[in-house]
Length: 91
Image (cartoon, rainbow, N blue to C red; front, side, top):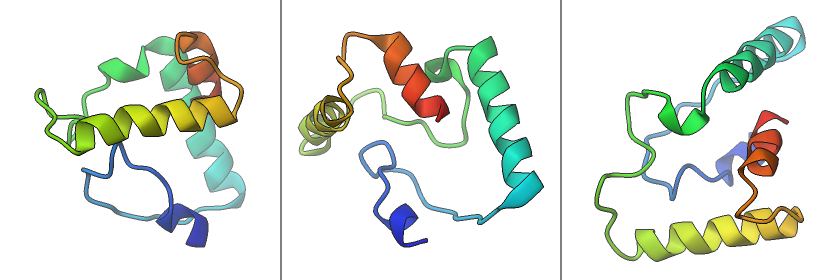
């Protein structure tokens, strides 16, 4: 829970709901999410709340880009490598 409280949420624009799962439920949720990502580009998923509005305002616009660069840079993933970014999302 402590780690989740510090997790990014698409420049922190979406409301939060936290569900804690473990064991077989966690394995099943992970399996279903991984299968969904393999079938479709995660950027194309329809959700209740969009990750980003069509026109993102400051300071969220620049923060989002800077956060992505820091996150993937710390993981050794080039921002221009979408396959590596998707692979990280699946883990």
